[in-house]
Image 1 (cartoon, rainbow, N blue to C red):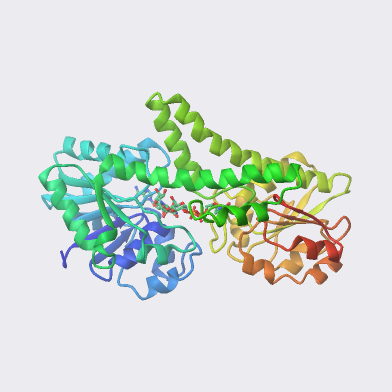
Image 2 (image 1 turned 30 degrees about the horizontal axis):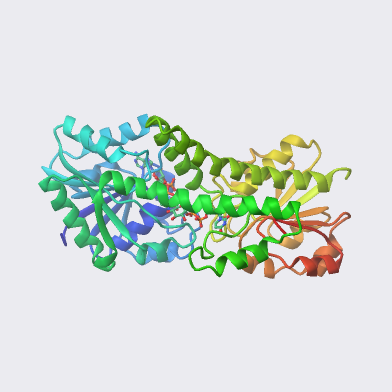
Length: 434
Ligand SMILES: NC(=O)c1ccc[n+]([C@@H]2O[C@H](COP(=O)([O-])OP(=O)(O)OC[C@H]3O[C@@H](n4cnc5c(N)ncnc54)[C@H](O)[C@@H]3O)[C@@H](O)[C@H]2O)c1
Ligand SMILES: O=c1ccn([C@@H]2O[C@H](COP(=O)(O)OP(=O)(O)O[C@H]3O[C@H](CO)[C@@H](O)[C@H](O)[C@H]3O)[C@@H](O)[C@H]2O)c(=O)[nH]1
């Protein structure tokens, strides 16, 4: 195993973090078809922001390439790719099959979150192409912003395989690989259906908790109940706990929505109509929460001539520059569509000006700012759309008040700021569920 060559396919946060950790024990190449991405990694200038990843890459022995011929020397191929369309996956498999010609046996690990039963379909594909590849499903549970910590100390590692002799041998090989840094008690072996479903179930339950708490913010907004007091009470019940019960404008990012849709698709294809409807409710609640916030913003700018809205936080959560399916982006786009004259100044320490321009197709009504002071200057309304509490505490509220124009609204989408303090300074404040 020591001299095994591992090729990680996909140079995103999952592939690169895992590649770096594995390179402490094995010979690792990260292959991505996007040459620009690879060039950034080769220059140790990551194509996206993930805390500590540049340093990890810099200190590792990982090789990076956009040339697929590295696949031929691989003993283990680990798929860490994003899934867009079925034909894309087929092309990837054809590529692996055509490049991997010289060795008689290899292990293919599916680490991407792809539609259920994909590992089985990968197996059939290679069987039909007369290649002796064993397929394992090892889903990834890391979160962006804490990718390195999660990869080094995972809560569990699931290794799914079929029940053939060589499948179990491949599973044992990967157990030995992971056991080099993960306690064996945290490495669980399962069948492939269970590992694939475990991944979707985990994200579905986390998303469901967020939608559940957000549903209570709607009740709090309509009554005298306060969401902070409610979550405090829920958190003290150890059976419920406090994780993933932080109220927000809704969850975002490239995983929860996509994985819920895969789960719903699976339920529908199994004719489990009620189960599908149940999970659709989680997505519907997420949209409802976002729309409630958009309406709140509209109410605050109604009647203001040429409203100027400052936005703090564009990425989908703290410690990442990822704007994929970010609630913040959705809110701005909705308001741009509904209001002809509104303009935005946006500030996020982890997002670049170029990303912002690309996200809004160069729209002249959205401006990127380097700091909060610049963003809020002459604005009528400030949207707090980051769940980065440390960032909120850096705000000089008196200076913000002086540089804003009437009606001086602060709308806190992540229930973080001290509402009473802002009201005492003269701001109008809306906080989700307050
Ligand atoms: N981002 C997360 O927090 C996270 C966590 C757990 C699991 N996942 C899953 O892991 C997978 C990867 O996630 P990510 O965020 O690193 O993705 P990403 O979109 O950032 O990166 C994927 C990379 O794969 C490359 N790629 C796609 N098809 C390829 C091919 N055929 N050949 C070579 N390169 C190819 C793309 O160019 C891209 O650079 C996804 O399936 C995702 O759902 C992501
Ligand atoms: O109490 C909470 C917790 C999170 N969020 C939001 O939920 C979204 C997702 O947050 P998080 O789970 O921290 O980020 P991801 O990086 O998307 O990670 C999720 O998705 C990954 C990809 O599948 C999984 O591997 C991880 O285990 C899973 O946490 C973000 O918009 C957060 O603002 C809330 O609104 N309230």
